[in-house]
Structures are given as structure tokens and as C-alpha cells.
Length: 193
Image 1 (spheres, rainbow, N blue to C red):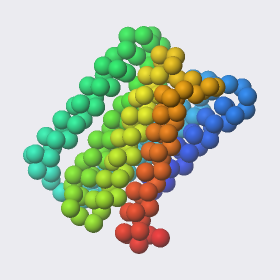
Image 2 (tube, rainbow, N blue to C red):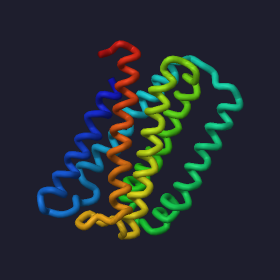
Image 3 (cartoon, one colour):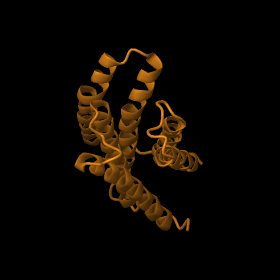
Image 4 (cartoon, rainbow, N blue to C red):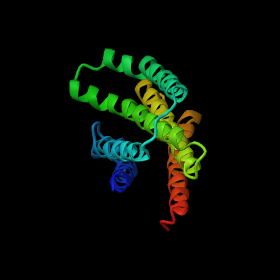
């Protein structure tokens, strides 16, 4: 379904980006085919989270909605102050602005969707894998935010990585491993494999 499409697009984006880097041609252009695959890849993730949340047919208590709004508000404020507002102020091309903003906004929506699913499933058999999936999306959002900030500030160093670059790269890789673990655990619980 939708997750299969998402899991095809994001690895394709990673491989495309890596092929630019490893080919000796330097950094990929912006926007690149990798950016297209990453941004389009958000859509099936959104669909999958929406369908999962809707399939649960559960009403969240007011306290859980408030907690989700607070967490989402904190993440949105951070993204607005450090990523979105500076981008709007410094980018005049509307297409580039859309692409730049698609990442932090997409990450926020993925994190919110995963957190809502976790809240509905709390205490149930699927709560552990979905908590792991939500943590993966939160780590991915943090890694994307750090990368965007470091890249636009000119401090993300690809050729001679420093500590910040290494941390960002480890966060990206870790988020994918954690996401895979959550999906694997869910599959085992559902006896899908």
C-alpha cells in the first residue's frame, strides 16, 4: 500500500543523493531528483498514517488532544523560528521556497500523525511498535531540521565531516533503522512474516 510506495521513494532518494556525492561531481543540484523523491515520499506516509488513525476509530480524550497540540506547538514554534521564518525572509523564488519548506512541514505532519496513532494505541499490543515508529519520525524531523540549519548556515561539511555533520548523518541513519525496527515488530505482532 502507501507505506510500500513511501519505502520505495525514500531509499531511491537516498541512493540518488549518494550517487551524486560518490560520483565525484560534488553536491547534487537543488532541486534534484532526490529532492523530488523525498518530497513526493511524504504523501504516501501521510496517507498511511491517516488511514491507520482512521481505521482505529477511537476518540482521544481531551487531555491527549491537548498533549498532542502542546508537543506539535513546541515543534512548530522551533521550526518556525529557526527554519521557516528565516527561509521565507531570504528566499524570493516561490518554487525553491516550496521545496525548502516541504521538508520541515512534512516532518512536523509525520511526527504529529505518528504521535496521534501512538496515543490511540497506548496500552494495546501495537503501542510498542508505533511508539518506535513515532520516535523514528521525531528523530528524522530533528535530523532534517539540523541538516537544513547547518546547510543554509554553510556549516554542514560533506568532504571533511566535523562533529555536527557526523551527528546529523548518524541521526538520519538511526531514524531509518528505528523506523524499520518498528515496522518489523508490528509485522511480527500481526504475523505478517
